Image (cartoon, rainbow, N blue to C red; front, side):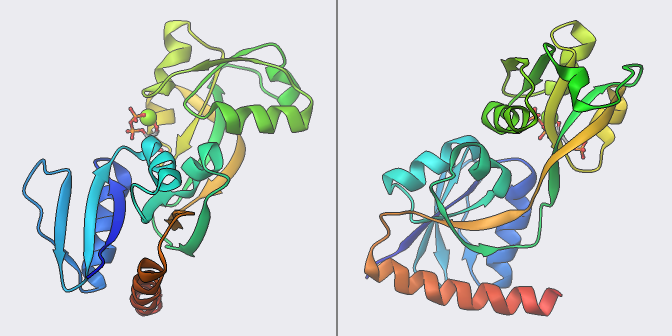
Length: 212
Ligand code: PRP
Ligand code: MG
């Protein structure tokens, strides 16, 4: 019998809530610690624990059939991928921030400035819309440190509680987008797995309704 392959975040903010929503759907994961691939009970499903940023490509390649992923990641590098369901957790913003003492009035203040980010496409699209050109520095984590070490004048990153900005003496000046966890679907999913996806969506919708 066919099994549907689902990717969830290996570690990080989405991991726990992703495992939880599957659990609430009655699907428990047989997960030994540090296992990257696991079977489940009560549903023909195989779980792969992957890095966030790699998930869009795995969906495209059909290595996995579906994924629980932050919408912000799809906006950055998975615009071609279909969203089947919004999951109403892991809500965050993707924002521009500057040092507290930066006298920021409008986006024009970023003209020609150096911006550190893990979301270059998202920033580029936003700045282009506003007619601003800036010097982007792509880094993969700990972005908020960049202004303090003289690497950038501004940053763009995820803001959830705002505590990382606060701790690094930064202030949020533009919210570029808001995001939540979504269930994304591979363009190459088989008909048999489409049927399993329907069953899973049915359970997810019931869980979301019960949570509301
Ligand atoms: C994420 C994100 C922000 C922070 C936002 O970083 O990149 O830095 O969380 O959350 P907050 O507003 O609640 O502070 P994470 O801790 O996942 O580490 P990373 O940037 O090194 O990936
Ligand atoms: Mg961070």
